Length: 497
Image 1 (cartoon, rainbow, N blue to C red):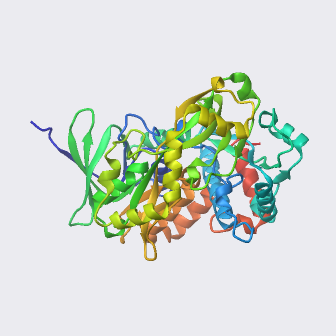
Image 2: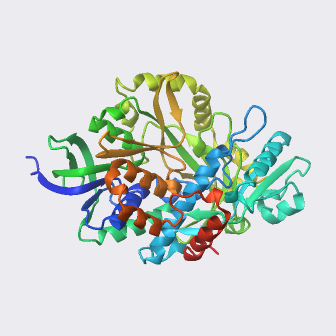
Image 3: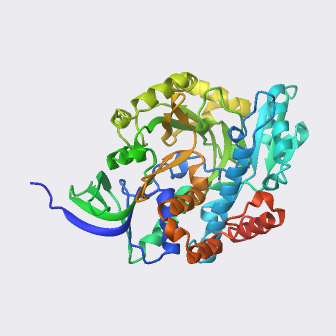
């Protein structure tokens, strides 16, 4: 005999207990504390998928070191617009987090964010020239002032001694360095935010809750059918607004909503692994996030980096990530996720994108076939003295890259994040991956403006937004004085000095 259904009503349902729902919920609560919210998480804890520290890069993606954000053009020049945009958005995140610290919502910022230099390193004459061109272009911009560049071996031995040990110094090598880089534990941040929200009388956190269906009611509200994975009980939640922030699973849930805006979207899952250092003496010798250039056909999440992290209060050193392929859309998902996502409306875009990205397919097959010794060879480009006994494999998170309709190509693979919402703004979903978490505040504010246009246009909303994010509505890159002031305040409150 089936369990009895229980029905409830709220203003907002947030699906997924990760950084996106945590950020959106916190913004909504700060802008309008009376709104009723229910947060639904399929697992028995929050932040266990893409937001977990072991499942993402944790770099605080601000384009200071990620070379894939500054692509080289056929004439040798470097495009920097994306890097500027991402750097602006990360500063927005830092301002919001600093506001939360000042208000006492976040008690100990050092638990989730720390200062770690961001570096780029390249090898060989061609890539050295690329990095120099990138450096010259970026340092003309306000957000990248203070970036250092060197080809000097002795200086590199000071910056990254671990990387220079045993290296053939005849090989051209260059690096850039930004001291203001950060390491961000998005799992800790998510837990802080959701813990704060769940203590409110009008906000409820429900764990072990799997969303089975999402349907539009005649009155315009949404009915979210939920199953309790512990008790088996099913219930319906009626909501005026639904946000789907369920990582790789968002596409499947968006398809259940039946909104026409979701038609044509597909997803391509990419898994990952790290090499994690187990030797404490080696871990102590490296203090930076050093990013290199991605292999041909590699997705952005697979840009190689030798990465200092602090996880659960302990210093760690990771290298990778190595890409892999699985039909799962989540680390704790189902192997049927990919086939279940294929519909008549998206099969053509998915096939077209697949044919246009054979390099990616070839790359992923090569990565899957790699043995530990092959992974070690990749590490040795960054650390020539690396030995396998000092490292172990750590499984990273699962990402789903967006595939969307394209009039010219039929379908294109998008590397980034995308918000898909209904015409009336009553339901929205976040699809995609990097630099997602780092730019979550800007993404969620944009979503609020799209989904609640009247409220977002009010003087009270705008004033509160400026209180939380002093630079809101202005471009830091265009204002040296404002940029310095905002950064100084964020650094102080987040204890990054």
